[in-house]
Length: 109
Image 1 (cartoon, rainbow, N blue to C red):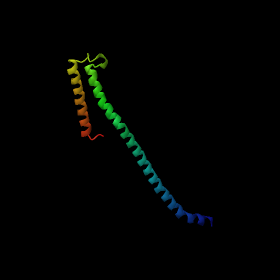
Image 2 (cartoon, helix red, strand yellow):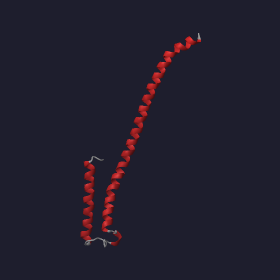
Image 3 (spheres, rainbow, N blue to C red):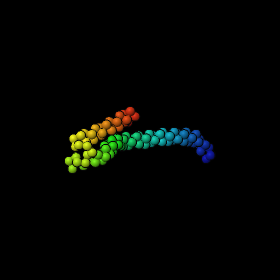
Image 4 (cartoon, helix red, strand yellow):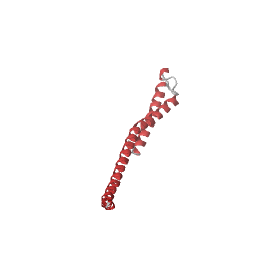
């Protein structure tokens, strides 16, 4: 008598188990989607500071090559003060433009 009562529950419990397994798959998929979305937004958030740092690194390197110390009224420039400063600014503009063009060509935003 007791065995027949548990036999009657076998089919509904099997259906319930299958439904729980399907729900578990759906929850795992939603969790994976949420983690991917957070990772993507974190990567996008760090892209802009990286691009700015990349551009400023080149400008800093050019300024250090010219030996510019603005407190010394441009005495460290390799050419005459007006031309040397213009040459340095031209180099910075050229390198920055080239780097921005490279970023645009590779579709980095």
